[in-house]
Amino acid sequence: MLDAERIRADFPILSCRTNDKPLIFLDSAASSQKPAAVLEAMDAAYRTCYANVHRGVYALSEEATRYYEEARDKVTAFINAAAREEVIFTRNATESINLVAYAWGRKALGPGDRILATEMEHHSNIVPWQLLAQETGAELRYLPITDAGELQLDALDDLLDERVKLMAFTLMSNVLGTITPAAEIVRRAHAVGATVLVDGAQGVPHLPVDVQALGCDFLAFSAHKMCGPTGIGVLYGRRALLEAMPPFLGGGDMIRRVELHRATWNDLPWKFEAGTPPIVEGIGLGAAVDYLNRLGMDAIAAHERDTARYAMERLSALPGLHIVGPPADRRGGVIAFTFRAIHPHDLAHLLDTEGIAVRAGHHCAQPLHARLGLNATTRASFYVYNTRADADRLAEGLEHVAHMLGKAV
Image (cartoon, rainbow, N blue to C red; front, side, top):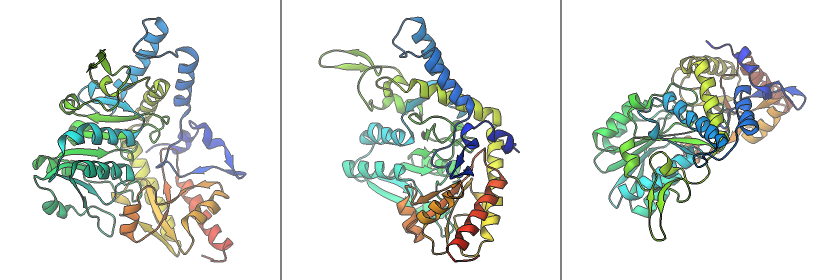
């Protein structure tokens, strides 16, 4: 198990106070905090070796290029991609998914084809497919979930057939914490000839992910949820697919040769990385990967399961509190809940007065909330720096809110 108390010292922001209370940060599903190692790596890049990459032949540019491309190698190893050419740097997971919809989907889909997603998806794994379906004439369908917030896998028998050209699903729900049986879904989708995209925005920061063992065709995730900076994400794609896809954006660095009326494209991965890339953010992502590797992804997953299990036990003891989603042994460190008749936004604001930062709203998953018959939930999400004491503070904060509103627990 991780020593979360020791790990907390690696994150400068966690020593801050909010509303004159010690900060309890429980919103890592939206964006995680950054360890000093990442901040220092980015600061050093700006101070000592900043220059544009790939194009300069002077020493400073070559050094910046080396650090930036080393980050790609680190990501390649982190997800066990077969080659560094399969790792594309984007702005975030959302852009990664849109890249696939635009550059792969426009060529691969047409009238009569189907896209299959699930009812638990983030908007980023719904809206791009809606737009693609509208443009191509394909049909978008959804794998339903159970009342307990897990996928109805038996429905795949009816939904998965040769008409399905794309299966898109999350590795872990950002609302329910549900960890999906990804390898099984990939296998069944491939059996009918479907291409598979996995939204790893929640999964990659918290679980060991091996894309070769998983067998997916595409994987999207963001740096800012895994101790890295905003402004950079990753698209993993099987090389054969990426080679066959047209560019997503046109401009500098993604070209080999440009004439007035034609152009040819650069090699992978740069074919999909037009313009000046997020250089320092890439270096920060590489430092984040180093940090997570030092902790160990298996240890991270075990720590979050333990913390979430304890938090669910504490919260479940509060009258009027209802947790949505599966049991603790089938979820990650995400707990969404309702508490009495208190609106989630009011609840989050009142918890903030106690120094406790949680999320409130639909969490970019309105169809999922509609399926659950809810307009909004309050969400507490845990990461490497959270402890059982944080779960105790959350439970105590909820009790305080109930008493303050005259609804004694």
